[in-house]
Amino acid sequence: MKTIIKNLLFPLCLLFISTVSFAHNIWIETSAKGKSGQVHTAKIFLGGYGENERDSTQKWFSNTAEAVIWLTAPDGSQKELTKTAVGNGFTTSFTPTQDGVYTLSVKHDVAEVFGTTKYIYYAAAKVQVGTAVTGKEWATFSDFAIQTNVKGKELKVKALFKNQVAADASLAVGAPSGWMKHLEAKAGEATVEAIWNGLYVVEASYREKATGTHNGKEYKAVMHIATFDTEVNNK
Image (cartoon, rainbow, N blue to C red; front, side, top):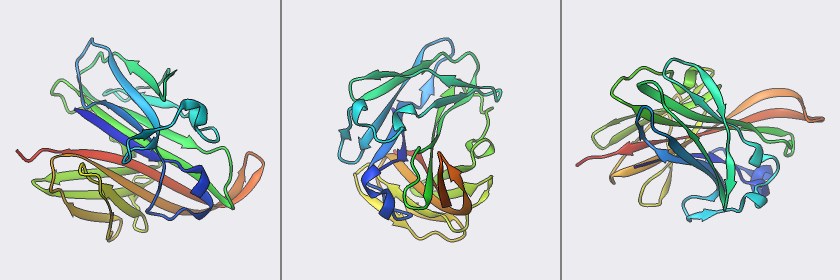
């Protein structure tokens, strides 16, 4: 089973981007389960996941091809994974040595400032090795993150900024059937009915009032965009 994490990037629309709707994506595909001592692989793509479109790595805009994949082990140690361009994406791998939850994650600053906004993208995928549940939660080491909880057909999602509920965050979810639904969030949290079995990709965005200079250009706000997905299996 694949875990697909989407981190949303779209060069042509960044000047007009809304807080809940994005057209291009960067995501990671990997098995949700791994085995200690066995090589575990992942793939990274840029394109339109819903349309099954994957851009050639030569067409990745700005500095998105430089996105770094990090691995956080169950004991909290972190390391950068090497990635290799293969066809229309990148591949990477690691060999688990501990039981517990490993997290593959991305935090990527887009090189350009679009308009007066700086963009930062986040994504994460969990890999379970063995039955131990030890491991660091994504929100503890990422400024912006998403948490999900599934009970039956009810999918609850929450956006966190600096490990606190992001009350003003916008939320959306993509279902296995292909539809994308914007969620009515209250205090940074929302609930959606998970009708189909499969992967539900949750998207969150949060506009931070901040000023500064990035690569020689001033910005007046920072747009944080994160994605996370949850597998639903109501057999």
